[in-house]
Structures are given as structure tokens and as C-alpha cells.
Image (cartoon, rainbow, N blue to C red; front, side):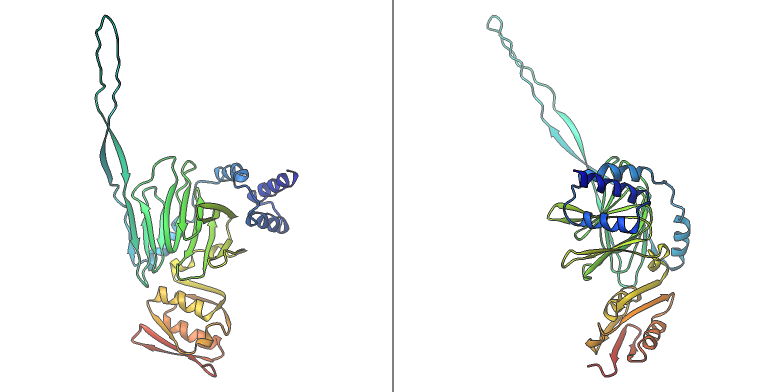
Length: 342
């Protein structure tokens, strides 16, 4: 009992931004150990969320940046409600026995309308980015080769559930009565009003969630059992391994969280295979790696800011000490090979 009280104190300090690095590590280890009772922290989390400011100061800045490179824009979806009449049969029988006289009475049938909410879906192709505005004014920037599924409108005081495959940057409209939840594979990301990025491509081994503003609660959903992993604040990033279910929480620059929306791609300690996978999605090209040993032979730290694919390949060649060679064929296929590597 005393241990749980100490953990609660650490959790409160963490939410207030007053926890030391060592205290954060103790708390995150506890949250990831499976020993925690999810209910014991819910009140503290709700209080922390309720204290968050409702404004989003970076909305205009991000929107203006995105307009410069956005290929298509999704207008606000029209609300469509389908009504299915369901006849509810209600009958009551009253029997009165008096001098051998009896009678029956029935109530009239009543019609009750049940609301069915239509689910909407939008997918992007390779090299495409779009902007979607949900019915609650939440803004979603959907990345290349991604899919978003969401209801045509949200019901007040109910969860706002949406599903993401791929990458998306979210600017969630604050609503303390209706938590916003993004489902992506086994990951569940819950917020009230904040901005954050999720990268969850099914072909990738690692899913990541990073926060620009506000607080984000990340959980793992395994066969219906929800396990809290971490509560992320601005500049924090969680990487989740889909194979072994391990995860790591580290830090990132706030301004880098949604860098892809403005064609700025950042790689930190990344192997060539990881880099090529991301570049394929956003530059609408295909890589043919003739020397497989190059895939994990070295690590790269690089930032490509609004560069075309030829400039990027030339920069990779120079960073490799000219050991990586490439040839661009018809602007869509790039062959890569290396010296002394078969």
C-alpha cells in the first residue's frame, strides 16, 4: 500500500512537470511492468487533462506550412444520419374480476428511432498527403500510403474513436467529456485536446507516438486487455516494437514531431533500409537494393529539408564515403549498390 502511495506521488509530480529524470524512470518502469492497476491513476490523469489549456497556439502556423505542400484538401464531411425504425411492442394486460366481468387493455405500439452513425474512410496513395477536418473540428494531416477511418459525427459524452493505418498528425479539438482515441494495431492513444504524431505502418516493426502539445496517454490493447504504457508530454516519443511488445520512451524536438508535413525528413541513428522505406512512401519511388548487405551496414543521422530525391541520393552517397552508388531510372525506380558489398 505504501509503495502504491509513493508511485501516486511520483505520478502527480510527473503530470505537473516537476519530476526529476530519475523519478520519471522509476514511474515509467512501473507503468510498463504490468503491476499497476489502471484505475488507480485515472483520477489523477483526468485532473491533469482538465487543467490543460484549450487553445492550440500552433494551429495557424502548422496549417500555413502544410498548405504549401499539401496535394489535396479534404473539406469537412457532411453529416449523414441513417434512421432505422424499430417497432417496440409494448403491451400491458389488466385483469379485473368483478361479478364475472373481465376486460383486457393494450397500450399502443410506439416507434423509437435508433441512430446509426455512418463510418467514413479515406486512403492516400504513395507520395500523397491530405488534410481532413472531422465533425468536431479536429484536424488530421494524413501521410502517404495511409488510411483513416472515422465516424461521420461524434456523440457528445462518448468516446471519439478513430482508426489509423500509416502516419498521421492530429490537432485534436478539446472536449473534456469526450476523450479522443486513436486505434492503430495494438496501440491505443488517448487524448482530450492536444497535437501529436503517430507512425503506424503495418509493414514496419516499430510504431511511434510523439507529442507536440498537451498530454497523450498510450496503452497496449492485447486481446481486449488494456495495459497503460506511458503518459507522454511535449517533446516525448514512444517507440513500440510490434514483435516483442517492448517499448522505449525518449525525447525529441517539439518542432520535429510533424516535420514530414512540410517535407522535412529527419533520421536519427537509422539504417539504410529504414530510410529507403520512408523515402519510398513520400517520394513515390521504388528502390531496388542490389547489395542487401548495405541495409544494416551503417547508421545515418540526416535531415532532408524540402529536397528532391536526386539531391537526397547524392547526399546519401557522400555520407557513405562514396561507397553507396545509385542510378535513377525513369524518375520512379532507383537502383542502389555498394563497393565491395555483394
